[in-house]
Image (cartoon, rainbow over all chains, first blue to last red; front, top):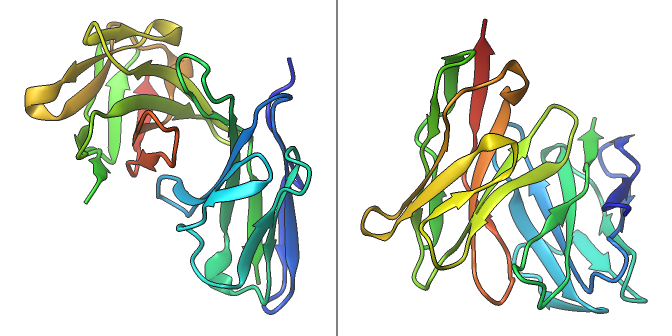
Length: 115
Length: 113
């Protein structure tokens, strides 16, 4: 079946602009995660949704970052007033709770470049 | 604090030689342990996972890993490396609740002919 998809694959923007990154999870997966991967680093957790609600947003670095999942499927990560330090690959993952074993399946990521 | 350490930033192995990638973790509860591989331009692909039971787990592409609680380690091994194994490898730790994974910084594997 189809895996996790993310759009766009690449996004170049200017400092101060607003961006939206989209994630389509695997069909039926109720848990959804956003991670950020900076160059030379492992992925770092941003936010976790269970259904429509954010179960854990402790990884969001500041209030410029926001994510929604209004219908419990597609999620959008929104970044306001982008800064050069926001440049990274943003990864989305989904999971089917209760599935044995509980495993997160990752999308290909969106590479964000802030000029 | 919870953390994952991958001591080797970059490893080069000859094709056909054996491979071991190290992973140490610090986690207060019973860890769920994962190894993921990331090829250039690709997403993270799960190689194998350990939750409980037999401490030697088999994964895809001929990889295996051994959980050693006394050493807080979960090292990845492969008996014979192929050129297509060149990629970045990440060790990660999670929990039963399925909350955030904590990743190591990764090990880049190069394969020489």
